[in-house]
Image 1 (spheres, one colour):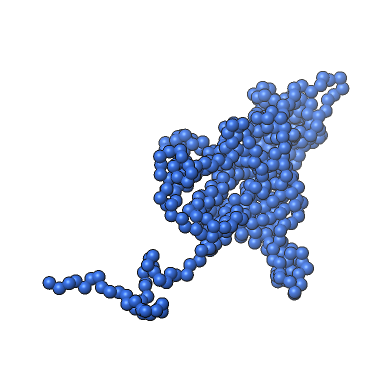
Image 2 (cartoon, rainbow, N blue to C red; image 1 turned 60 degrees about the horizontal axis):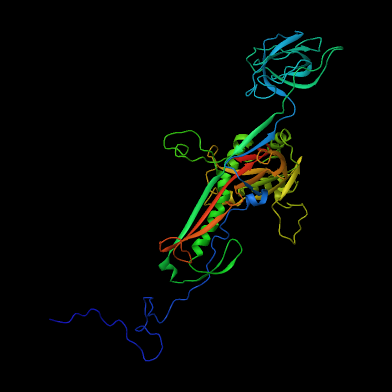
Length: 477
């Protein structure tokens, strides 16, 4: 029986260290004479991959020792009703009106609207037919939404009402008048405060490496997103877990929604509370611009007129995706007579020796608006690249008022200045849950269990407070 030819002689060594076709090793193991050239430095093909920075730019962080954060925001100082009905005919000297606004009598005196005898009011027909001024002669009784107005004009009510249950008129109070020798104002008005609350959510992450892998050291040179550079061993994955967790601390505050309803299998039924993130809050209590980006001055004028009716904050920052930023650049460039030809953008003084500046950092029209690209809205692994079809839920930008606002902090029991956007994290004298990290296991210096691994744990408990949401504008697709 013949001897098998396997294994054969694959190599014919040469007497000298000269690579030939017969002594070249093609499988790269520890016997290799010729190892491949390798780059020990990691190539950053995606650039800076983190997307957090938004809240650090516009807000602050402060501790809270409760699982519920509550604050009070001022209501309107003056009284106006926009859905008022009446059955009074045109030309009458007085009329009975009924308030049909949603939420009334939720403010003003207990169980009744804020109309008192002797107050002077302006009555404006919602169809544009005319207006009157008059004095309230009969105030609403407790639980009643009706009041009577005597008109100053000899011609009486300018436009007939269509019924007490309809929305024929807008009425607002502008003063008062009393006859000689009469008693003073009856009744008083309570401050119209609105109480808001939010609850923190607990965020966690972890990274684990077993003890055996820790014994095999492999180094790689990196430049990290937080500005550090140098050599990392197996902890590179731990480092990226930390960066990812840092991003989630911000994106959770942006995207969080409360758990509503107790639908079987739903988050609320399973014990999750959720939280009110920035997008949710602004969509619920703020200003919403939908149906595409504002691309003309007329579009922005509508936004500005809405801001006039809210807090009228002087300076505002626009955080935008790339397309929205381009749309604003094009809109502003079009205001220059040479803009259509693209010859002078920016300060309109570019010359042939300099690079043409085709972008703007901001503009002033009634208020100051500064714009900046928001990486979160451009990142393809997050909101970047989502469908921009109307109703898709895509967000193109967010207008954030600059500065701070004064609110009544129910925990502190006093007024306090707070940024419009800020994060409250759970903390006490013995427990700080702003950013916790600890190591468990039996490897890497840890000795907490018999697990042959090192586990790096991350935890934070926090909520975002969006104060004065009526001053924010969200630009939805």
